[in-house]
Length: 114
Length: 116
Image (cartoon, rainbow over the protein chains, first blue to last red):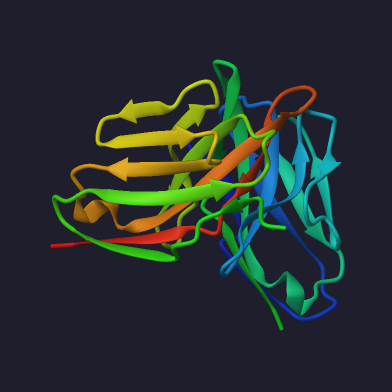
Protein backbone atom coordinates (compact mmCIF):
# COMPACT_ATOMS: atom_id res chain seq x y z
CA UNK A 1 0.00 0.00 0.00
CA UNK A 2 1.99 3.00 -1.31
CA UNK A 3 -0.54 5.68 -0.24
CA UNK A 4 -0.24 8.83 -2.37
CA UNK A 5 2.55 8.86 -4.95
CA UNK A 6 3.75 11.79 -7.06
CA UNK A 7 6.01 12.02 -10.09
CA UNK A 8 8.42 13.57 -10.76
CA UNK A 9 10.12 14.46 -7.47
CA UNK A 10 12.05 17.34 -9.02
CA UNK A 11 11.66 19.31 -12.24
CA UNK A 12 13.29 22.36 -13.79
CA UNK A 13 11.42 24.16 -16.56
CA UNK A 14 12.11 27.19 -18.67
CA UNK A 15 9.53 29.94 -18.86
CA UNK A 16 6.85 29.00 -21.37
CA UNK A 17 7.40 25.25 -21.22
CA UNK A 18 4.58 22.93 -20.25
CA UNK A 19 4.48 19.88 -18.05
CA UNK A 20 2.13 17.56 -16.18
CA UNK A 21 2.53 16.54 -12.56
CA UNK A 22 1.19 13.07 -11.88
CA UNK A 23 -0.53 11.86 -8.72
CA UNK A 24 -1.99 8.49 -7.84
CA UNK A 25 -3.50 7.00 -4.69
CA UNK A 26 -4.19 3.36 -3.89
CA UNK A 27 -6.46 3.90 -0.87
CA UNK A 28 -9.74 3.99 -2.82
CA UNK A 29 -10.36 7.59 -1.74
CA UNK A 30 -13.02 9.60 -3.51
CA UNK A 31 -11.58 13.10 -3.12
CA UNK A 32 -8.21 14.37 -4.34
CA UNK A 33 -6.47 17.73 -4.13
CA UNK A 34 -3.51 19.73 -5.44
CA UNK A 35 -1.72 22.24 -3.20
CA UNK A 36 1.30 24.43 -3.59
CA UNK A 37 3.60 25.43 -0.75
CA UNK A 38 5.66 28.61 -0.91
CA UNK A 39 8.00 29.94 1.79
CA UNK A 40 6.03 31.71 4.52
CA UNK A 41 2.69 30.96 2.82
CA UNK A 42 1.57 27.58 4.13
CA UNK A 43 -0.22 25.25 1.71
CA UNK A 44 -2.70 26.77 -0.72
CA UNK A 45 -5.33 24.78 -2.61
CA UNK A 46 -5.00 24.93 -6.40
CA UNK A 47 -7.70 22.51 -7.57
CA UNK A 48 -9.66 19.67 -6.10
CA UNK A 49 -11.78 16.76 -7.24
CA UNK A 50 -14.55 15.85 -4.82
CA UNK A 51 -15.25 12.63 -6.68
CA UNK A 52 -14.37 10.89 -9.93
CA UNK A 53 -15.58 12.94 -12.87
CA UNK A 54 -15.64 16.29 -11.06
CA UNK A 55 -13.03 19.00 -10.63
CA UNK A 56 -13.21 22.50 -9.22
CA UNK A 57 -11.03 25.52 -8.57
CA UNK A 58 -9.39 26.19 -5.26
CA UNK A 59 -7.74 29.32 -3.93
CA UNK A 60 -5.00 29.77 -6.58
CA UNK A 61 -6.07 28.09 -9.86
CA UNK A 62 -4.69 30.57 -12.41
CA UNK A 63 -2.14 29.05 -14.77
CA UNK A 64 -3.12 25.44 -13.99
CA UNK A 65 -5.45 22.77 -15.31
CA UNK A 66 -6.32 19.39 -13.86
CA UNK A 67 -7.63 16.04 -15.01
CA UNK A 68 -9.23 13.39 -12.83
CA UNK A 69 -8.31 10.49 -15.05
CA UNK A 70 -10.02 7.85 -12.91
CA UNK A 71 -10.61 7.27 -9.21
CA UNK A 72 -6.89 6.70 -8.57
CA UNK A 73 -5.25 9.43 -10.63
CA UNK A 74 -5.38 13.22 -10.54
CA UNK A 75 -2.94 15.20 -12.70
CA UNK A 76 -1.96 18.87 -12.64
CA UNK A 77 -0.88 20.60 -15.85
CA UNK A 78 1.07 23.80 -16.33
CA UNK A 79 0.43 24.93 -19.91
CA UNK A 80 2.97 27.77 -20.01
CA UNK A 81 5.19 27.79 -16.94
CA UNK A 82 6.09 31.09 -15.27
CA UNK A 83 8.72 31.85 -12.59
CA UNK A 84 5.84 32.59 -10.16
CA UNK A 85 4.95 28.88 -10.37
CA UNK A 86 8.24 27.88 -8.76
CA UNK A 87 7.02 26.01 -5.71
CA UNK A 88 6.62 22.65 -4.04
CA UNK A 89 3.46 20.89 -5.18
CA UNK A 90 1.61 18.39 -3.01
CA UNK A 91 -1.15 16.05 -4.00
CA UNK A 92 -3.53 14.72 -1.36
CA UNK A 93 -6.52 12.43 -1.09
CA UNK A 94 -9.10 12.18 1.66
CA UNK A 95 -11.23 9.64 3.47
CA UNK A 96 -14.18 10.21 5.74
CA UNK A 97 -13.53 9.62 9.43
CA UNK A 98 -16.79 9.96 11.32
CA UNK A 99 -18.35 13.18 10.16
CA UNK A 100 -15.13 14.64 8.81
CA UNK A 101 -12.42 14.02 6.26
CA UNK A 102 -8.74 13.33 6.84
CA UNK A 103 -6.33 14.23 4.05
CA UNK A 104 -3.28 12.16 3.19
CA UNK A 105 -0.43 13.82 1.33
CA UNK A 106 2.12 12.67 -1.21
CA UNK A 107 5.86 13.44 -0.90
CA UNK A 108 5.72 16.48 -3.16
CA UNK A 109 7.20 17.71 -6.45
CA UNK A 110 9.76 20.50 -6.28
CA UNK A 111 9.38 22.64 -9.41
CA UNK A 112 11.73 25.41 -10.47
CA UNK A 113 10.86 27.68 -13.41
CA UNK A 114 13.73 29.75 -14.76
CA UNK B 1 -6.61 37.60 3.98
CA UNK B 2 -4.96 35.01 6.22
CA UNK B 3 -7.84 33.14 7.83
CA UNK B 4 -5.58 30.78 9.78
CA UNK B 5 -2.56 32.29 11.48
CA UNK B 6 0.43 30.79 13.18
CA UNK B 7 2.24 33.80 14.54
CA UNK B 8 5.35 31.99 15.76
CA UNK B 9 7.54 30.91 12.84
CA UNK B 10 9.78 28.93 15.17
CA UNK B 11 9.92 27.41 18.64
CA UNK B 12 12.79 25.80 20.51
CA UNK B 13 12.17 23.46 23.45
CA UNK B 14 14.32 21.17 25.55
CA UNK B 15 13.79 17.44 25.39
CA UNK B 16 11.31 16.24 27.99
CA UNK B 17 9.63 19.64 28.33
CA UNK B 18 6.25 20.70 26.98
CA UNK B 19 5.94 22.18 23.49
CA UNK B 20 2.98 24.50 22.92
CA UNK B 21 2.16 25.53 19.37
CA UNK B 22 -0.52 28.13 18.79
CA UNK B 23 -2.96 28.88 16.00
CA UNK B 24 -5.58 31.61 15.57
CA UNK B 25 -8.39 31.77 13.05
CA UNK B 26 -10.81 34.44 11.89
CA UNK B 27 -13.55 32.51 10.07
CA UNK B 28 -16.31 31.56 12.52
CA UNK B 29 -17.63 29.03 9.99
CA UNK B 30 -14.66 26.71 10.57
CA UNK B 31 -15.95 23.61 12.31
CA UNK B 32 -13.05 21.16 12.13
CA UNK B 33 -9.40 21.74 12.93
CA UNK B 34 -6.35 19.63 12.23
CA UNK B 35 -2.63 19.62 12.94
CA UNK B 36 -0.15 18.28 10.43
CA UNK B 37 3.53 17.56 10.92
CA UNK B 38 6.04 17.96 8.11
CA UNK B 39 9.63 16.77 7.85
CA UNK B 40 11.93 18.22 5.16
CA UNK B 41 11.44 16.72 1.69
CA UNK B 42 8.31 14.86 2.80
CA UNK B 43 4.59 15.56 2.56
CA UNK B 44 2.60 16.69 5.62
CA UNK B 45 1.31 13.87 7.81
CA UNK B 46 -1.86 14.06 9.85
CA UNK B 47 -1.26 14.34 13.58
CA UNK B 48 -4.48 15.11 15.46
CA UNK B 49 -7.80 16.85 14.92
CA UNK B 50 -10.70 18.35 16.84
CA UNK B 51 -14.25 19.24 15.93
CA UNK B 52 -15.86 22.47 17.06
CA UNK B 53 -18.19 20.62 19.42
CA UNK B 54 -15.25 19.69 21.62
CA UNK B 55 -12.68 21.73 23.49
CA UNK B 56 -10.00 19.07 23.92
CA UNK B 57 -8.74 15.99 22.15
CA UNK B 58 -5.87 13.77 23.26
CA UNK B 59 -3.79 11.21 21.46
CA UNK B 60 -0.82 9.92 23.41
CA UNK B 61 1.69 12.72 23.87
CA UNK B 62 -0.37 15.11 21.73
CA UNK B 63 -3.32 17.20 22.95
CA UNK B 64 -5.21 19.83 21.00
CA UNK B 65 -7.21 22.50 22.80
CA UNK B 66 -9.88 24.61 21.14
CA UNK B 67 -11.18 27.92 22.49
CA UNK B 68 -14.00 28.91 20.15
CA UNK B 69 -14.78 32.21 21.83
CA UNK B 70 -11.18 33.32 21.32
CA UNK B 71 -10.92 31.59 17.92
CA UNK B 72 -7.74 29.96 19.14
CA UNK B 73 -6.35 26.46 19.21
CA UNK B 74 -3.15 25.03 20.55
CA UNK B 75 -1.18 21.82 20.25
CA UNK B 76 0.60 20.51 23.34
CA UNK B 77 3.33 17.91 23.06
CA UNK B 78 4.37 16.31 26.34
CA UNK B 79 7.08 15.21 26.75
CA UNK B 80 8.83 16.64 23.70
CA UNK B 81 11.29 14.35 21.92
CA UNK B 82 14.03 15.13 19.36
CA UNK B 83 12.02 13.24 16.73
CA UNK B 84 9.26 15.83 17.14
CA UNK B 85 11.48 18.42 15.44
CA UNK B 86 9.52 19.35 12.32
CA UNK B 87 7.26 22.04 10.88
CA UNK B 88 3.74 21.94 12.32
CA UNK B 89 0.81 23.24 10.29
CA UNK B 90 -2.56 24.13 11.69
CA UNK B 91 -5.48 23.67 9.25
CA UNK B 92 -9.19 24.39 9.37
CA UNK B 93 -12.24 23.27 7.41
CA UNK B 94 -15.59 24.98 6.89
CA UNK B 95 -16.93 23.32 3.82
CA UNK B 96 -17.71 19.77 2.91
CA UNK B 97 -17.67 19.15 -0.81
CA UNK B 98 -20.53 17.64 -2.76
CA UNK B 99 -19.56 14.02 -3.32
CA UNK B 100 -17.16 13.98 -0.41
CA UNK B 101 -14.00 15.62 0.88
CA UNK B 102 -13.39 18.99 2.43
CA UNK B 103 -11.44 22.17 1.72
CA UNK B 104 -8.65 22.91 4.17
CA UNK B 105 -7.18 26.32 4.93
CA UNK B 106 -3.64 26.09 6.28
CA UNK B 107 -1.59 28.30 8.53
CA UNK B 108 1.97 29.24 7.61
CA UNK B 109 3.57 26.70 9.95
CA UNK B 110 5.77 26.70 13.05
CA UNK B 111 9.22 25.13 12.98
CA UNK B 112 9.68 23.18 16.22
CA UNK B 113 13.18 22.27 17.34
CA UNK B 114 13.55 19.93 20.29
CA UNK B 115 17.02 20.14 21.72
CA UNK B 116 18.86 17.54 23.76
